[in-house]
Length: 231
Image 1 (cartoon, helix red, strand yellow):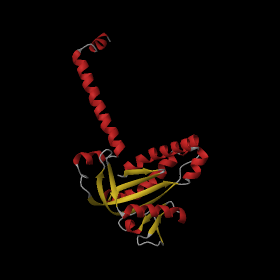
Image 2 (tube, rainbow, N blue to C red):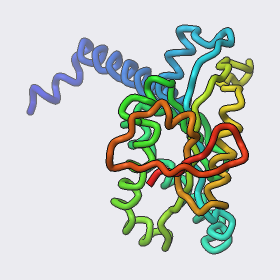
Image 3 (cartoon, helix red, strand yellow):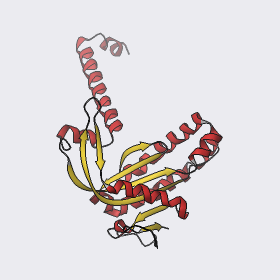
Image 4 (cartoon, helix red, strand yellow):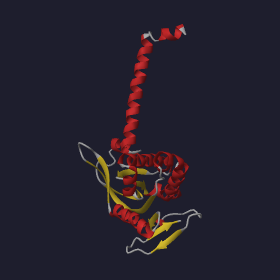
């Protein structure tokens, strides 16, 4: 132990400790920045992939908590925000496991996105919903103990082309612009009217190879996309 304590007075040891600490802070900073922007986005900024707008095919899922207004009134706004934050934290694992990205949070809703190939592979863009179900069910008791309720949610998903670009100067952001986002949001909105939890456009389903345990039911809708629910 005497040699151990004596090593702290060694100038070479102090230099190594200082260098190690600085390196740790740098790594931690970029790790947190990557989490703030979203996995992979920071690298895209560095490489300049989105300095100029370009077109790409993407899948978007709008996932919204049910009965948000009544929940906020019953729980109180502070407790409700705690519930929303807990829910968003819990879904991060399933999103990463299914190669997804969190595009943005809109109140008590979250917008997920995939590049077309990643979303279609192994039906990741659909599988994520059931993985989220499994995660929430696993943590059911924790939600009941802390908030007295278990989050319920609905989702709409669609595939289409968007223009992707980096915008802003003082605060930069990566945006997607295209009808696919509006369509996905409308599909999600139809879930409540039709009493369904997950609905997808027929266009997206036509590109997917669904596992046998999932059944898609065609539903009439006043739009060329055609909407379906997944059982």
